[in-house]
Amino acid sequence: MTIATERVVSRTLRRAAERGVLAPSVHNTQPWRFVVTPGAVEIRSDRTRRLTVLDPTLRQLTISCGCALLNARVAMAAAGFEPVVERFPDPMDPDLLARVSPGRGRTRVPIGELDAAIDDPPPNRPALRGGPAPHGALPQPPAPAPSGPGPRARGPPRPPPAAPA
Image 1 (tube, one colour):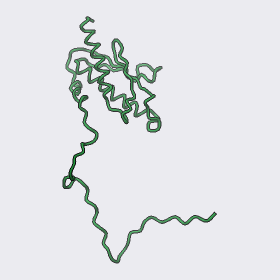
Image 2 (cartoon, helix red, strand yellow):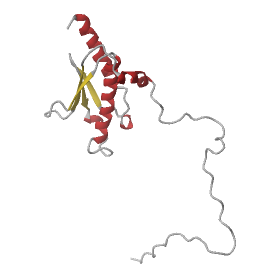
Image 3 (cartoon, one colour):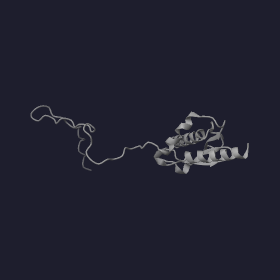
Image 4 (cartoon, one colour):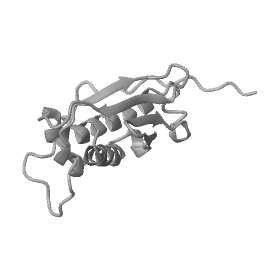
């Protein structure tokens, strides 16, 4: 590998890590760590950022890290490299979830077209605007119940009163 190629690969790996950290995650916990090595980017789970009650099995943490992996792959593809992914590359290291390295270089990789979307993710909530809601935007309340004699709705049965102690 030439010095110029090494520089391109090095920049690509750094950019892949930078783009990876922009990924969405469960409750924005960002439960990952990126380690840039000379030939790859490692994506590691960071269990100190897990949600112990919400995610006792680490499923959401792993999905969040998968989103970060996708961003890293997209960044490599945008740089013209076919990303090569090793999932769970070290069975003795369960926190090492993936290693992604640049494969064949200088080709058009379709997934790279998603790179611009990393900078402008869609909002998860629409912007609030002042003023009344447009006609038909809100559900209509049910018609009032008829008044007068006739059957009446009854609520759930009440429990018997507690016996005095």
